[in-house]
Length: 198
Image (cartoon, rainbow, N blue to C red; front, side, top):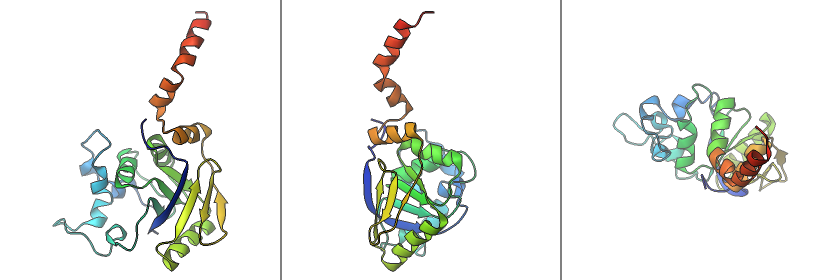
């Protein structure tokens, strides 16, 4: 299995109400040397999290113990910039399983879906409701139901549907990456090859 199966996620959210967060901010280029998906979480938002002497910046949200959870809530146009898949790796390795925003860069969105991070795109109005819920109570929880393609603010009746590619949805529910998917239908591929004249 390539990554954890995603069914229903119930978690608090970590707010990052900044627009146009690009992949170089998510994981700076100097940390792209590794080729395995491990260890990148240590450098997630590195330049925002740490001073030059590697001490944590007290005012950055990931260094604030008040906020925790597996849902990262970002501003509009999250994941813009270069196409580095390491940005998605860093988010997953840190422990986030879902990113909520009102708009995602396409390549970043697909990189997330390939490794088990669910990008939930909501309307600007709903995103503001999410931020408000966290501001009102940092322990506010949210329920992301992948099968139903809905996100809910648990403290209210507010819910919103989100779109996802059916193939990627099925893969996330099963914890498959593209190779796992092909291995899962290996028998069907073999039968098709045998039954198809050259």
